[in-house]
Image (cartoon, rainbow, N blue to C red; front, top):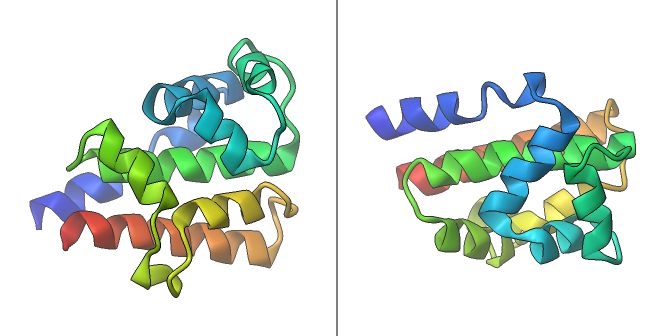
Length: 133
């Protein structure tokens, strides 16, 4: 029960963070190459620009925020290496898709659309399930 409570609280502050802080925190956990891959950008210098306060497209900003929430949830119980592997591994909670696939799809969807909200909910539910299993 305590693990679930920590997992639920882990990402609560993410919506209030500046975009650059979201990028910095996610890079600290996953590394620039994986963040670039998850968001569909071709170079890590783009991610570095986000960390430095460069403009982030709304779709990618939304995907980064959900990815950070999920990463923080998984990090409540596991080290960064496990968090990175979680994003790349097949997940039964997600019909054997990798969580990273959902983040990539989110980075291409309008952030306020119902499909993006559904994918975000699925990703966070999978992170919580992973932590509490």
